[in-house]
Length: 101
Image (cartoon, rainbow, N blue to C red; front, side, top):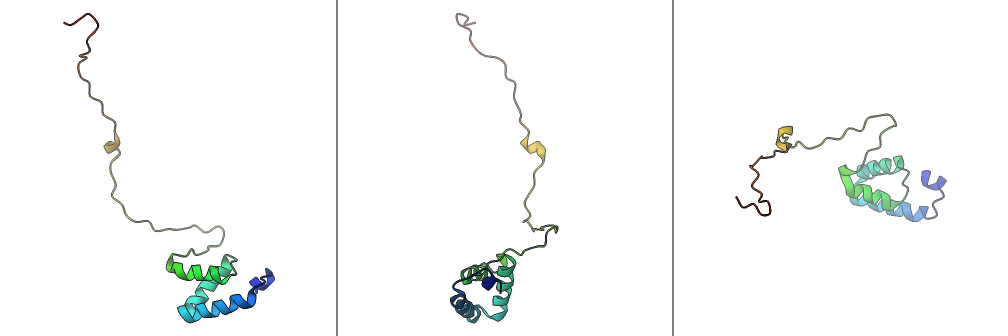
């Protein structure tokens, strides 16, 4: 319905391609991909194909105002002291012109 309302000129061809994607990936996977594509207002079979290829990595739209929660991998941490800049003070051993003492 959204594709027709948007004036898609290739609607018949797109529907044929979508049916082929359903046969290749299964009906439920196609329906899930179509739901995601519709949420993003993407009407082309090419868009649905990309969503199917991305699998679980495809973004899931959230209603406005909801927090986006992303699980990040655990990484080792270090103390801030590990980043401290240390300087060493060595005696001044510079030679002044004419003074070789």
